[in-house]
Length: 114
Length: 113
Image 1 (tube, chains in turn brown, orange):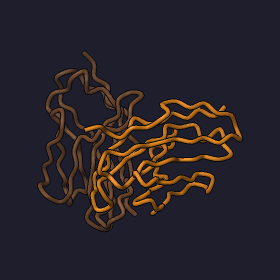
Image 2 (cartoon, one colour; image 1 turned 60 degrees about the vertical axis):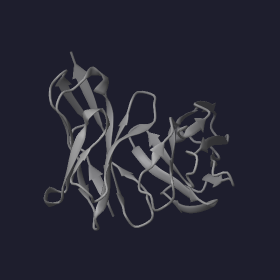
Image 3 (tube, chains in turn cyan, red; image 1 turned 45 degrees about the vertical axis):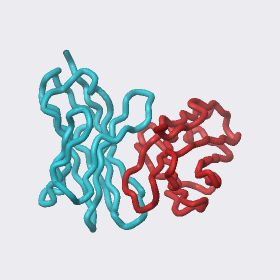
């Protein structure tokens, strides 16, 4: 069964600093990987996705993630944090087998200080 | 293009009652998924509907059920509510089962007293 591990339930950065949110996955077959963002009292918004095309994926709001099969990782980065990036971020995995149940990590809350 | 919509935004019930949550997918999407986001338990898959049929369910008791209507909108019903059913219930839709990307609605926050 597939699973996702997000290291760090909270990450704090200063405005303008690099954002790095970590995600490692476990899957017996090639996975599809996603990052979603959740702002307070809202649903999930898709940031970016990896579906076996380019390993470096660019998403919205300046975020990108790199799929590294050898490390079973899909870390999310942004060169310069903005106050508006403060939110909870979820990494998720699904299998390209026709049944698209998303398996989520436990989430990382990003705190951005001025 | 309108996104996934859910109603109501908030719902307060007491133990033992029934709750009905509604979801309208993005126009053209046939698959609807329900997830529960409970405090301390994270996001868990509940149910998947496609073309009016329940295709799969997560590890939840039978009192969690639902249906999908001919217009692809969906209802989630929770019977015999328990305190631990308090959670944010998220609905997502995808174009069809082969499409890997799910788009989420804003959720319904259910509080069981």
